[in-house]
Length: 177
Image 1 (spheres, helix red, strand yellow):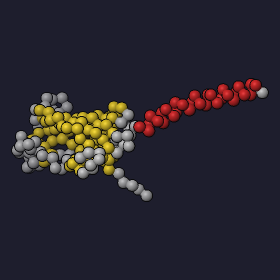
Image 2 (tube, helix red, strand yellow; image 1 turned 90 degrees about the vertical axis):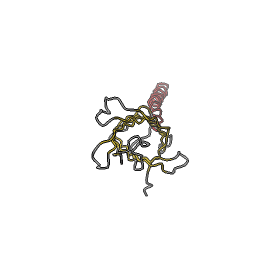
Image 3 (cartoon, helix red, strand yellow; image 1 turned 180 degrees about the vertical axis):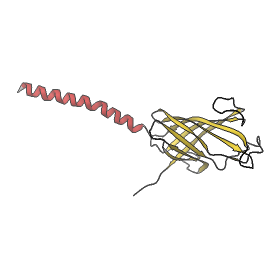
Image 4 (cartoon, helix red, strand yellow; image 1 turned 90 degrees about the horizontal axis):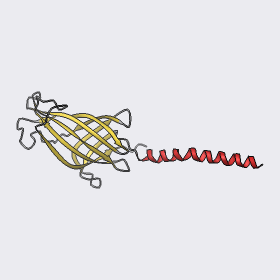
């Protein structure tokens, strides 16, 4: 009878020891949001008035993927520094998870002249994203480096960087029945 109680006590302790790491992992996983989805620039998490940009983050894993940035009202002249620029392309690039709800990203695109073909400048946007605990808001830091069209944005030197203020995004989602 005594060995019966000891055996069941040991089995209970063993099951509890196996369950604790699983609970810890479940709690840890609960905080890791996915970046995939469509995000809209907003004034703030509390004020969801759109600020003009949209990003679609894609990927087959939660660790890395691709970004597509559209910014239709962006000033392609960069404050009249490039008066020949009339529009910018969609910026495309990659993101990678750096922690639970944090990500680094880089995207590249270019401004073109009125003929729609001639590049005026190349831009590389890089920064860091931190998602909120509810996974629906993001705080973003960004630096936009401007390159001459003849200089590689991958290993060349930029003409100048533009350090953007911290800004916010909000996840677009649909409530499905």
